[in-house]
Length: 294
Image (spheres, rainbow, N blue to C red):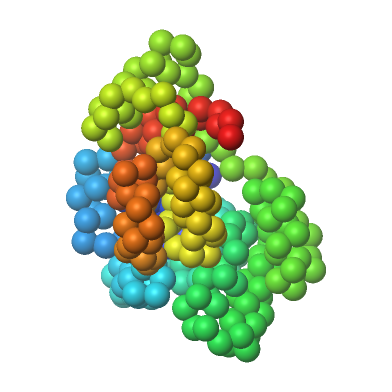
């Protein structure tokens, strides 16, 4: 069986959905005879990343980031790219967004007469509202995007809470809860120590006796990160020791950094930028799992 996984984001663009897509591609391929393709977007760094990471089944087009939603933006579907996609004899396609490549997955399914499964991952209403700042345009866009789910053969969500959100957006069809997997093995005690050593070495500090807090993901206000920063400021004012690590990029990263400097918490908050090394991500998780007692 030949399976197509369609989504705008994919490593080296690091977000949760992109990593889920990568896990699907690699884990399905590891099961045996099935062949998978990741039909995804990228930037100038992507082909070099694919070569180094051994990503032999990526079919890439180009995404043009917009300041309000960077690193996301419009996708360019060139004739060469479309010819390549339509030439692949897919047996089933799986889309992970209702946007450019999700629409392409639906077209491929219709042209080939094959099933189209789509997964609703994120609260795209907030992303649209943050970009256009006009409620009626956001409502119109959401109604248009919901048609993507209504036309699919099956709709998946990673949790019941996500299903509730999709219902709020106006979708009335059947929903299947299909939990996301994880590519990280549970480490033993010896491996945990090695991971923690790697993490502390990466951030350039010795082991510390204060709680380490961690956020890995897109740096944008829709994630309630300004509320997190407010909480960190209050903790600092109360004399509560902590080290907060932010890993990732996003349109509001600079505003977050400015907030930290302006409020005098830059000695206990660090911005690590984009991290594509999965072992290093696991290492950060290993030091960010310390219980916090206030």
